[in-house]
Every structure is written in C-alpha cells, then in structure tokens.
Image (cartoon, rainbow, N blue to C red; front, side, top):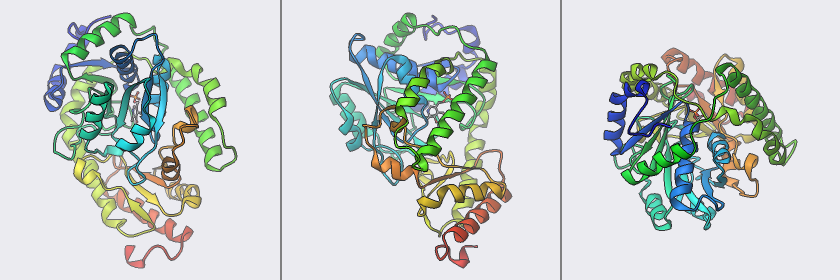
Length: 391
Ligand SMILES: Cc1ncc(COP(=O)(O)O)c(C=O)c1O
C-alpha cells in the first residue's frame, strides 16, 4: 500500500486541491479514496490503533441523525457503532448527548456537519482530548462551510472526512481523509500497510448492490415510520454483511475532482441563493426553518421541521406529485444498528424533517414554484396553519 507521502502518480495531480484543503484546515496530509465511506473506515482503524489496543473491543460514537454509511463503515472496520441523541433544533448531537454514550471502549467521536450546518466544536474537541479519544469531522454535506468562529470546517477534528460523490456539494466522484498531525500521519501509514484496500467489486456490481441496499433501507424505514413494526435491527444486521463490498473503493478519476474544484464557490453561491429564495417564501407556515446555513455559508438542502408529523408522508408525496423533489432525511440510525441506544429527539426530528433541493439541477423559478407547492399542500393538509399572505 502506498503511504501518504508516496502518492500514486494519478493522485499527484490533486496537489492544488490538497494545498487548498490543508491550508484551510491547517492539516498535515490527505489520503484519497473512492468514497467517504472508505475514508471513515481508515479513520476508525487509525483511532482504534492510536487509542486502544487493536485486540480489545472499540466503540465509536456517531450521531443518530445521519445516513447509515458511517455506521456501516464502522462495522467493516471492526468498531462498534454507538449513537448519540441530537439537539431537536438542528439534528446534530451535543456535548452532553455524546458524553452519555462514552465508556472506556470509546476510541472516537464522529461529528457530522448535517445539511451544511456547523457548531462550535471547541468544547467537544477539548473533552475528546481529556478522554484521549479522536474527534472525526464528517464534512460530506458541508464542503466549504465556516464554523461559528469563522474558521473552516475540518480545522478542529483530529481527522476529517470528505465526499465528492453524487448528492454532495461537488459531485465529481471521490472521497478523502484529512489528517491533522504528523503523529497521526505515521499511524495512517502503518494502518494502510496493515489493511490495504481489498480487491474491489466492479462498478456495475456496486450499482446493483447499492440499489438493493437502498430498497431495503426504504422498506424498513417505511415500516418504522408507519409504526407497522417496532424493531428492524435484528433483520437488518443479519443482511448487512451482504453489502460489505460497497464501502471500500479506490479513487478512480482524480482529474474530474481537479476540474470541479475551481467551481466550488459558484456552486456554494447557487445553493445559498436558492436557500434565500425558499426562505423568503416560507417565512410563515406550520414549521420551523433550519437556518444555520446563514452562518455556515453552506446549504446542502433547505430543511423544514413541520408541525404535522402524522401527515408528513402524505405531504411529501403531494409535493412530489406536483413535480418537485422532497426528501425526509434521516431516519435515526440507532434503529438499525442498536435500538437500545435510545434517541427520542432523533425520532421526533425524523418524523418532522422535510428537505428541499438547492443544487445545480434547480433554478430560481423551480424553487419559487416548489415553495408554492409546499405552502399549498401544507394549507390543504393542515388548514388554518398557513396565512393567506404567505402565498
Ligand atoms: C454525512 C455523510 N457521511 C458519509 C457519507 C458517505 O459518502 P460516500 O458516498 O462518499 O461514501 C455520506 C453520504 O451519503 C454522508 O451523507
């Protein structure tokens, strides 16, 4: 396996991107992969090696509101995922909810900058240092965001994970692990030598398997959302090993990332302007707006927490029938991997969240019409809650 210092020829062309990221975050080194999932896998392996003996059981604390990839990658790395409840206003964990999950087996905490939101990470970083565990920032949805003190996301964690895959801020393919110190860079080199990337499944097989995973996940979420069943983890964990081949991938097309990189500021501006357009139309209604993108500068999707959880599915379907994309991300991940890590705030967040599109596929007119559809359908399903002036 190549060390960080001797990159494969193909990765050397990413030097301009590396220099930008290292400068913004004061980082020491970057490893390139095909997915953030792979970067997370190596981040866990590093944490396991640096914090604990690799022969002892290790745990990582993850937020309960997230896609399931960080937890799937943890199982693959041989680390047990544990889940912290979230702040009901942001969907992100707090220092207190993370502390509740700590035990002597904990080797790392992953902080996910959900939907482009950030938080003051200094108290969490300080606590992680006291406990001698690693802080991993997951920036998949927050590329280019600012922390509340104006510094860059990725500048606080010991390790930071990036994704450039579809649905992220730049969709050119790839993932990265940014390493903050030279000590951890040496550990990373040892880890890569001990656990090189295995032979990969083909792109076609990965696509088929990915679709199967997605369908399984959707089916189980629907059962939980409709309260048709209360426990899915035993079934899910039995099937989960079948999807292992999805998570460990090498970087295929560094030139695509190099070419996309100069567009980042334009992409962020387009997203921000789309969010402002929603914000102007949706200022009053039966919801709370997640508005942290104002400060972070990054909106991954424009998100509302609606006041009608029991009608969320009907509402989302109605907006989709009007021709607009809507998602309801995420279902609490603890329900799949460890329901005994109870996360009541995450359950309530998941029953209220609506995400609207702000990416390059939508323009101002689309956003305005989508906002009208949101208002119209909220009024229809939840009369008396939308004032007429809102139209
Ligand atoms: C917060 C977060 N982390 C990690 C990932 C995984 O990214 P990738 O598809 O590059 O493995 C995702 C993707 O959905 C994500 O949203």
